[in-house]
Length: 95
Image 1 (tube, helix red, strand yellow):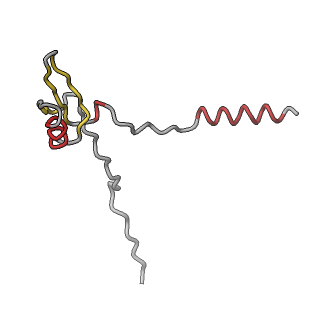
Image 2 (tube, one colour; image 1 turned 90 degrees about the horizontal axis):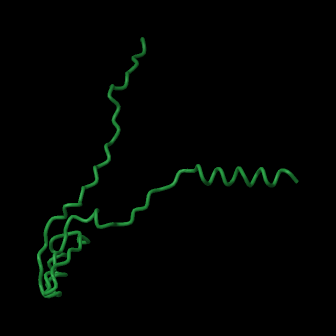
Image 3 (tube, rainbow, N blue to C red; image 1 turned 45 degrees about the horizontal axis):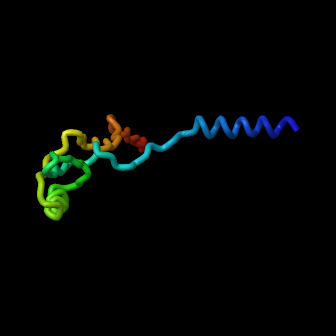
């Protein structure tokens, strides 16, 4: 009867210590373009556009505005391909 609680503790520990994947949800900081809308009450900024064309198309239907590059955007670094630094050795057989 003592085995069940011990197994349960190991399962919980494995779940807590296991590798978790980072969320790939988009945020205002991962879009390269911001739209600024001007109204009588002031202006509002939304940084949720993937291209300048998308931003302009959205603002054109909302009484105009301005599209600017996002000050929060940082492009993701491209993953480097691992290449061995040394050439593989070629063995020559004695004839």
